[in-house]
Image 1 (cartoon, rainbow, N blue to C red):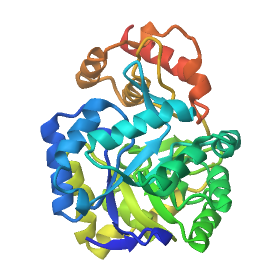
Image 2: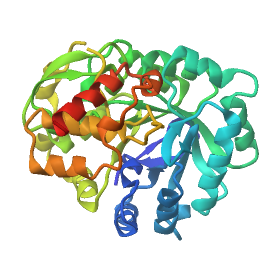
Image 3: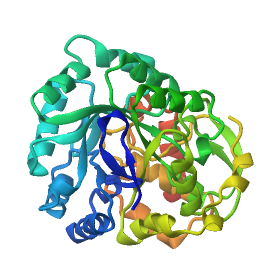
Length: 373
């Protein structure tokens, strides 16, 4: 494993790190396998984004006895409502969830406490107001429950404000081939270096699109780090090694955060470290990702909670997958949903919460038309 400094924190972080988001609702044996394999191969950074009790309990059991070998994160503002992920901006509501994270992970602190998923200037203003999220994060750090403070977000202009504020030590931001030509991205990475910030590159596979998309596709701004989006012709056969090599080659990147749901996916990511120079070469892909569209779902579920418990991200994923052909496997996955798309009441709450301009209600209606016709 290669290790890099996480900015001015001085922490040594593995070049490839593990995002645990996709381990949500996975069997405990799978979680144990992925995390233990990760540690055995030198991965030492794990992003813990959710506050679901079962998810945290599985992570806690898998990491038992390894706390001194790993760096853990927490996300202030990632909460649960009606058994669904909910992004909260209430410090009073968010702090108890963070304290439960500590308890279930059997630790008294996280190494990085992220101000969770801030994507607009107005959103950032809520961070720095009196008795806002930043004040809570600083107090938690003073109490010894966090070593450093970070921010996660998807847009250049917001992260710039956070960096320039001097309040954060670490930035989590999308860095992938999809964002190669994003206006202001290079300047942001340079700014992070000048300020000595650790840079955690999320979405190195572009939310999975780089490994699965074919032909001309719309690339949304939130997958890239800013802008209004663009159209790109995806070359066939893009590999994980190319994606991760690109991300790790960008200025200031401390670690590439890879979401994995199985030991096999972990092995694919780690194989980048042993890939040949030819296998890692991404130079021929750069011209494909150069201009900017908006409004495509990245399956992040930041639009939740849904009052009728629709898994909006999964419905959107199944809708997009069906564009290439409605297979029996896709139908079976749709039938397995707890709530179908037709249950949508068109309340519009999801549209208001979506930071990426997705026409959520219209897409849910489209999914119902495809799968329930």
